[in-house]
Amino acid sequence: MIRKKLAFIFTAYLTTLLLMALQKPVFLIYYSTLAAESCPANWLGVILHGLKLDLTVAGYITALPLLVTLVTLWVSIPERLARRIHNIYFALISVITSLIFAVDIELYEHWGFRIDSTILMYLTDPSTAMASIDWTMGIRQTLFFAAWTALMIVCYRRFVVRFSDSQRLQIRWQALLWTPVLLLLGGLDFLAIRGGVGASVANISKVYFSSNLFLNHAATNPVFSFLSTLGSNEEFDKMYLFFPEEERAARFESLRGNRPSAEPTHKVLRTTRPNVVVILMESFARTIMDTDREGSRIMPNLDRYKQEGLWFENFFANSFRTDRGEVAVLSGFPGQTNVSIMKLPGKSRNLPSIARTLSANGYKTRFYYGGDLNFTNQASYLYDTGWQELVWQKDLKFDRPASNWGFDDEVMCDYVADQIIAQSARGEQFLTGFLTLSSHTPYDVPYAKFQHKMLNAAAFSDECLGRMLDKLKASPAWDNLLIVMVADHGYPFPENLTYVEPLRYRIPMLWLGGAVERPMVIEDYFSQIDICASVLAQMDLPHSDFEYSKDIFSPSSPRFAYYAFEEGFGVVDSTGVAVWDGKARQMLQETAPGLADKGRTMLQTTYRDLSRR
Image (cartoon, rainbow, N blue to C red; front, side):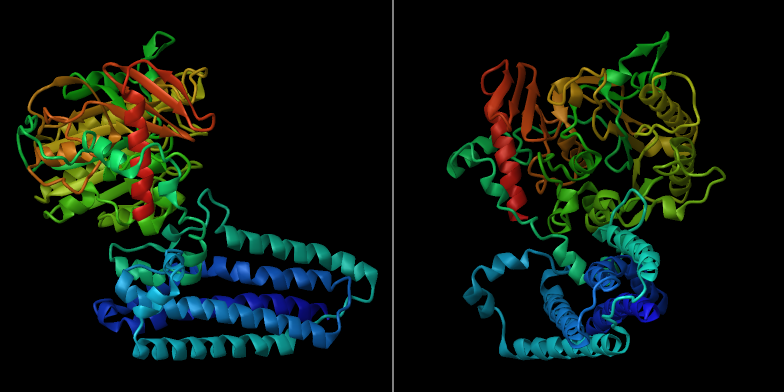
């Protein structure tokens, strides 16, 4: 009896997993023209990487049958009723998943990405949605839906008839013995749903493995893609309604980054085609950089190198998290208060990016990270916005073991420097991205300089970056390098620094390399969103698709920094500060007139834009 119960659970899970996996070759065959360029190894890669989300979906579908089976250890259910319940449940699963698959496989041709909850927006007006469906397509997809539903129902009914067992165990000690076993299976099922035991939970990035976006899309489970985005299509443009739309648009005109400039940008580089390296420094706050502890500076190497390049004295992060700061730096899109666009692949893929622009101009684009790029959907965001190659923990082999977050900055800085030198020696034009990680909690570093764990980790990262810069400077690659070093966000140090204060968001930014014409200190107020336009303008490349990104070196650019935190914003410029708390719906600070309205305009425009992507 217990064998049938266990066999039922395992068969339910494996049957679902195989049906989900089978969708991958069907999708590839359906789009055979796009798949024709892929070798058999790519097809296998689609199936194997797709299993990561197939396992999750199978976990969700198996959860209820597992719970029912656990109940039947103690309670008898009539055999006919139990089978009917199971058959109805799996029939519903078959209909729902087949409908999603049938709609998705047709929509992909038109949308270019796997189905998500965006489709619900169109279903609010069924007549308009039906107007875009011709009868041939409707009949074809209806037949496809019916066939796939029938296949799933037949597969499910076979094992329900053979293995379902609704009888309770007759001897109480047997029920006591096997209850923990089924609870353990429940725990394993939860791990499948969660996506494993690592820091990164199940998300679309889990299956991204190639610079060929079609292969990544083919590996994506459409059921997961749809369900994971439910609730993400909020009416964002109705969340912060400070001004009527016409007034908001007029106010934003004076703040936007891509407005025409009356004067040419001031050139600070020796060349218009440098090799570009963007180093995102984890939690490198100015408050930490400017600190002395035990007679020593926390970041002496950054202090040393800031004398040799373009140092930005009043520079700010746009948010408080890596996922939002990364998007601000690489796509020029402002941070959000209570949502992360990186976690919404249907929206983040539409963002402009420095990688997309440079790759369109012949640059090879590669991003390095010593940890897991599945975390917060980074991999899908990076691939979707033009990064051709991602190198992260799964690709790396070093002598020392990885820490909780991945390989530490010492091995990564040395490795990335070697890769940059090698690319330069081959005569390639390239954009390299690199995100450090050792200064991230739990600050597990092979270093002991300061007792304060965060300061010690920051000092370790600074030393690693210093050696990296020394190595690059000693190589021929340096002559044509533009290195943009910027923190991903700030840090609450000292500990009494509140979450809303501008000082919490003040961060270092430094431009280095042989491509920099001469050392200079920029005193004007800017933020992470302004990096894209500033770099591209120096390269004489268009940046009109970056609405928010201001060219720092253009005389006509507005000089202000904007940041968002949970339910609020801050604005800083040379005249003062404004901070607004959205929870209390009140200004916490406003030292200069007009700053608050700048913040309101930026926040309202960000969410209006978010709703339309």
